[in-house]
Amino acid sequence: MTCREAIELMLDYLDAALSPPSVEELERHFAACAPCRAYLATYKKTKALAAEANRVEMPDEMKRRLRRFLLEQLRNTT
Image 1 (cartoon, rainbow, N blue to C red):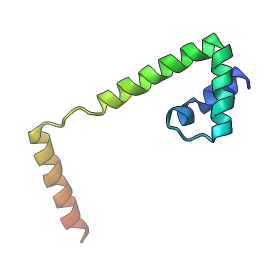
Image 2 (image 1 turned 90 degrees about the vertical axis):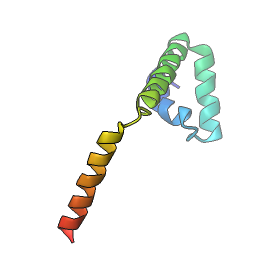
Image 3 (image 1 turned 180 degrees about the vertical axis):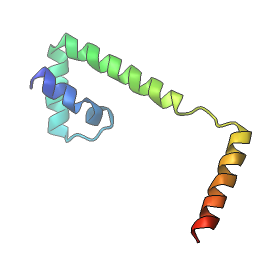
């Protein structure tokens, strides 16, 4: 497996969407390739930070305005 192939599989690897043989091959590559291990660590951290950023709570006023807007849109389409 090349580094390019490993990088292309990382998202599926982190999402546990690879077949067991693919996981084994990828993990063998990681064991032998320090740059890909570093890339994987950075990718994991980036994914975790992005997930955390998406958890920002919407302010109550914005929720009310969005709900009102959506209801108006529904009424206008019927």
